Image 1 (spheres, one colour):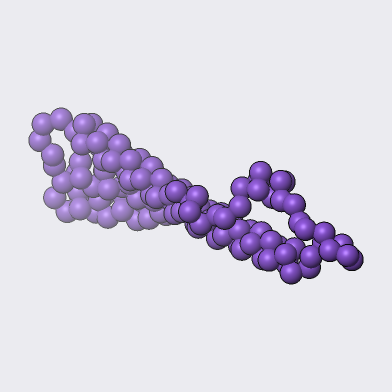
Image 2 (cartoon, rainbow, N blue to C red):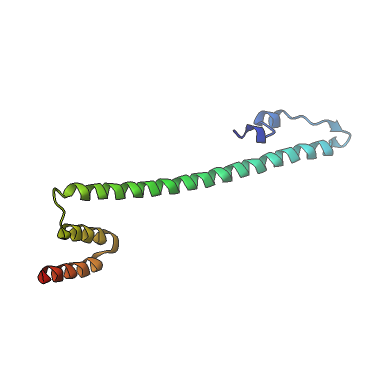
Length: 122
């Protein structure tokens, strides 16, 4: 997939031989080779960074899907727990249970008080 972006292989680097001049290796030849090596390193870093971003996106998507699955299971449990006819009291109980999980106990206490008031009115 990324092979066409990378110029050198590890074997190319290992087996590279420079021509020797009177004062050592030819500087221009060494500089050209190092430019190629630097270009490959830049490509490696770009590839790694794009793969890391893709990985993070996929992990976030997995977390969202897991949360959706939990919510679906909860909804299925609530739907399965009711048998036959659903009354307003059943709906309020289920809503109360869901709010306990989401908001904590304060919101549910208020709902229970409202439910008691409604029952007293009827």
